[in-house]
Amino acid sequence: MRPHRPAETATACTVRRPVRVLLAEDHAITLWGLRQLVDSTGPRMRIAGTASTCAELLAHPALPETDVVLLDLGLGDANAINCVTELVGNAGVKVVLLTGDLNPSHHRDAVMRGARGVVL
Image (cartoon, rainbow, N blue to C red; front, side, top):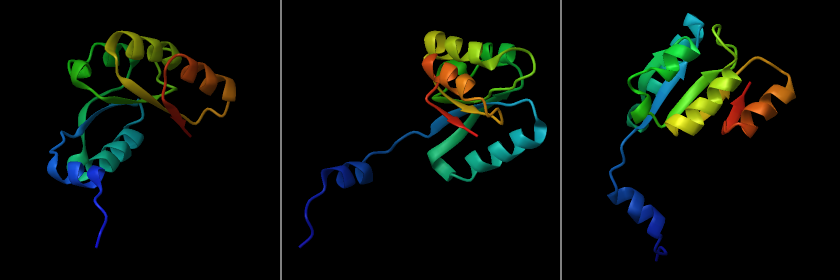
């Protein structure tokens, strides 16, 4: 006899909405790849929108309904670390940084400002 697992039963019975992801990336090929990755998750995640600058991201109409922002640390118009503070503090979204920057002090600074993680 199989033991009762409440979490398994709750998951099977609960209909969940997809995680809404806003992509902030200024390189078209990387943005395309991220879009393909999120779209491949099927109904679990969906793209809420895209932005190529911090200014565009902070003014994006889908931001209030966004769950997670994947933020390129090297956006061209501003220091994206400063953008993290705005996103977490004012918009209340979770932020995950995407970066090729290997400087751990930049990663630490972003996490201290509220980023949930850093993906190299």
